[in-house]
Structures are given as structure tokens and as C-alpha cells.
Length: 206
Image 1 (cartoon, rainbow, N blue to C red):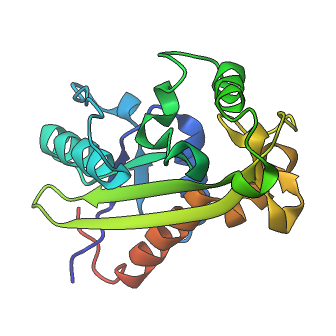
Image 2: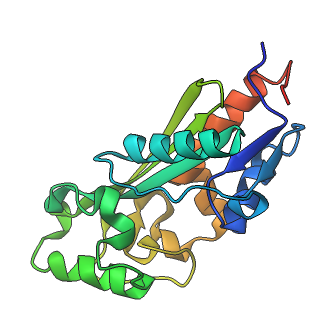
């Protein structure tokens, strides 16, 4: 097998994401790079209808431009009472460059009058790994919860303060990062990715 490269480019400039992945697979000889480590990375418009489409598009275009195996992600919050919104529009649903506080307020305003038992929602994360030779793998994580009536907690980011996770008896913004990573949509997808690397580590490629 020659499935695992010695270097994987993460289609992000978020060093927190890089460190998060490195911590999960620190036992493997794989080096993770960010977009800050490469020149001329493409600007990818996330115009897909699904998380899978967006993640694959980012990974394919970046792998083609850089010649490196690339891992890209797309994630968001899907609320049943809002017909699945904000979904793939989660990052810009309240407007481009809106703050996390504005994002949460926008959702809560849309959900005024919706009772507790109808506030079900889920976070979804899809990771796409694309190799320059065209091989691909997709990893998906989902975390079920409900939308609160007001923001709670100071940790996390995005919609975490309004996402209630029943098993923890708290919002994602009320539990620490390590605990959240064990159960979150992103954590689940990353664990699948880490398992993939470990299962294919015998003959790494450069």
C-alpha cells in the first residue's frame, strides 16, 4: 500500500486546527502544513449544495495547485425547524464577516416562538482527503443536540453558545475544548481520519 503521505496540507490558515490534528495522530510520521506554508494556494468559492461538495472542491483544487495531499473540511449547523438552515451557509448566514455573537442572535431571532421540543438540531462536519493522483477519502461526523433560548457559556466559537448537548448537560460553549473534541461533529470526523491514517501507515509515500 502507498496510501499515507509524509506531508498533508490542511486547507486552512487556522493554526488551532493544525495543532488539533497533530495531537490526534502524533504517533504517526506525518507532517501537517497549513496554507501559510505554501505559495499560490487557490481561493475556493464554497458554492456547493452539501458539505461533501464543498469539502471535496476545496481539497481537489488545493491538491491540484500545490501537488500535495490535501485535507479540507466544511461544517455547519442544521436546524430542523428552519428546514436545515443555516447548513452550508453557516459561516455567512448572518452576513459576511459577522461576529459569533451576531450569528447566534440571528438564529435565536428566527426561532422566536418555536417550543423546546421542536428545537432539534445537529452539527455536521465533513473532511475530504484528496491525493494529487486523484485518490479520495471522505470522513463525516455528526453531533445531535437542540437550540437553546439564549446563549450560554464562554468557551468554543461560532454557534457553540446556543447548541445544547444533552449528554453533557451543557452547551458546547460550557464544556472545555478537550471534552468537546471527544464528542463533537468535528472530533468524530477527525477520529475517522486518524483511524484511516493508522490503518494505512505501513508504506507512507512522500
